[in-house]
Length: 136
Image 1 (cartoon, rainbow, N blue to C red):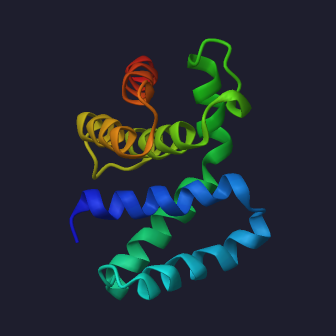
Image 2: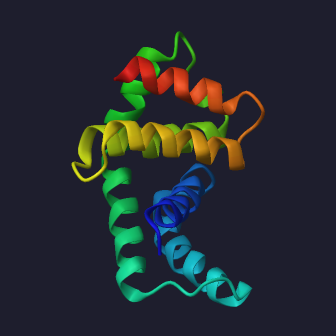
Image 3: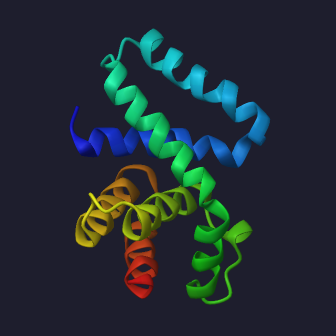
């Protein structure tokens, strides 16, 4: 599985954080992978599933710090006012920029913009690019 596909799965799993409690997310992780199997999509190897889960958990552990940084540069926009898709993409990208030494900053930003094109609104790619540019 390509890194971009892994990242997309991490995004989809992380997106669920906005709609489920911390306790429910433990179950949601299992349900996410069950849903993939039932849909007949590409099966995810154990190695890739572990990578997705580990990175998801690492991001969740840093969410408080990540959200503070997002609020600092988003010109008065509180986290609660940001679109859920855009917020999730920014969280993932900022985690990669700040904490994941395996992902170059330019790659993290480019991949975030690509996710925004696929899942966000018309203005999402430019918005996300602008926010991430301010952060780096």
